[in-house]
Amino acid sequence: EQPVGQEPSEPVGEQPVGQEPSQSVAQEPVDLERSQSKQTSENPLTWSYPQVAKPEHRPTVSERLKQVAANSVSAQCGESVVRVQVNQDLLGIGRLIQPERITLGGCAATEEDAEAHVITFESELHGCGSELTMTEDVLIYTFTLVYEPKPLANTSIVKTSAAMVDIECHYLRNHDVSSNALKPTWIPNISNMVAEELLYFSLRLMTADWQFERPSNHYYLGDIINMEASVMPYHHVPLRVFVDRCVATLAPDVHTVPRYSFIEDHGCLVDAKLTGSSSQFLSRSQDDKIQFQLESFRFQPQNDSQQLYITCHLKASAASSPIDAENKACSFTDGWKAAGGDDLVCGCCDSSCAVSKARDLDSDLGEATLGPIMVQE
Image (cartoon, rainbow, N blue to C red; front, side):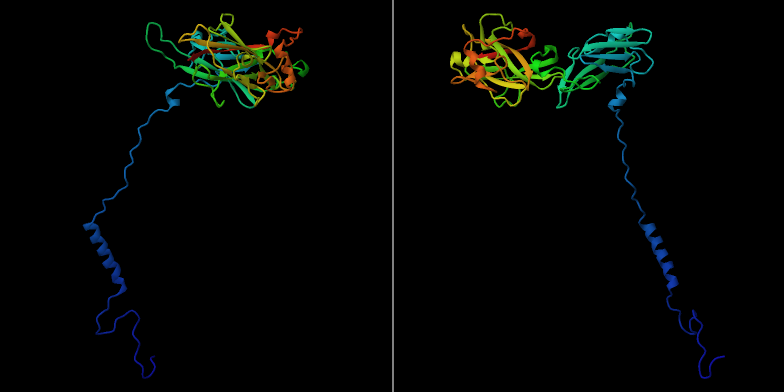
């Protein structure tokens, strides 16, 4: 029942009688759909994801070259010898390689086991084209195993790929290379008895700042020739290198004439005393190297193409051993001066420095030659 004096209320959602219906919310989706349909027909979408061209496949090095089969090469590094064994199925394809087609740094195999199909190479550490590099802690000898197939009989084709394998032997510096407890390889109080074959001496021409090996061997008369001698121990305790004696000649043979001996008596650089030159040993910066200077000269008779060869005998002793008459580096500058140690050790340079009779001096020496060195006026 409606309350007295009030008109009945209108139902919700209905329009009053006699009035036009107002625009309702329900009509908006219809108009929006019509608008979207119109846009689609007038402006069709033409955009699409760009096509990315696939790069042309080029085989990598590992795809182009046949790899050596795993475990087909083994090496045993001894104190002075390396032993390398190669399975004849080197490439792991079931095809045996020919022993004469594989070398270790140019050296042929030393053994061949026909039943086991194993080829063996054996070489001294400094043989068969080995390369020696040195770090602060280790010496590294690198060998290269090279396989070069040859064409099949009566053809010009090969069925296997060439291969190269690098083999490295690492040795701790200043220590024994065996797997046993480390022990000194020689006793300090007999430290001069150094085996030459276990030491590596070098002699180089150096730039004026001593930073690099000199790329040119050409000098003008009166120029200073900078030379650096060094020793690299195989597995010895730290060493000190000395220039025992040096001679200059016109040919590599030290016994040819004319010849000029400018370092004598176990480290006496006599050139400055004989000629008044500035030739001298420099103060040491490290024990395993010694630097010295020689003022360039020419032999008589002179000619435009004269060339010199300098041959020096180098020696090493324990760095802990004292400087003495047989192990010294002396220069003449207002008297004899030692590059290291007491100048008194140079006193014998004016007479004759003693030689120990207990050993053959030459057995401790390494010989190094520089040349040809071109000296022009």
